[in-house]
Length: 193
Image (cartoon, helix red, strand yellow):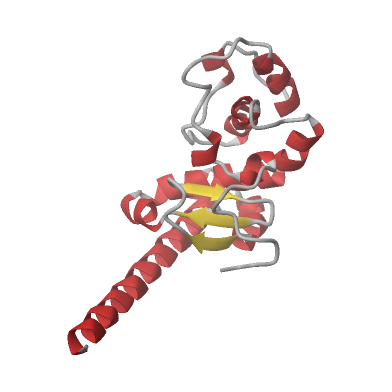
């Protein structure tokens, strides 16, 4: 019984240390994002600091939901550079600022077409960010630049289905904040871990 208690105490202690490290790294990434280092985007401050962070290993890196919760994989956060964290936070927050979830609903996006919507939304975000966030660019998918997500979606939807699907699996990346479709890891409305 004593050994079990010690093991439990060690596990709780390590969890607290990891939690603090994750919180510090995310705070540093947010600060980097709104500083001049990232391209001088102080206008993102309110949005970035409005996110509610939820630690979970059920996402590969990060994702958001429509309630402005940022789901983060603690192991990915601990292993990524601060600027990589900041770029991913910017990517996620732009889905929310652009109301990609609501617009996806308006466009009739469903499970069969959400990979194309994710690509369309990511194309628009990649054009707005003043740095490379690892998002696709229109020329990479043979599209003209400066279109709306709806325009890109219409054009991408007309293309034949490819294997693997366009971009990354939407279940493993952006989350319901990008298309309005709840994921298994999403908390219920009003819940904040």
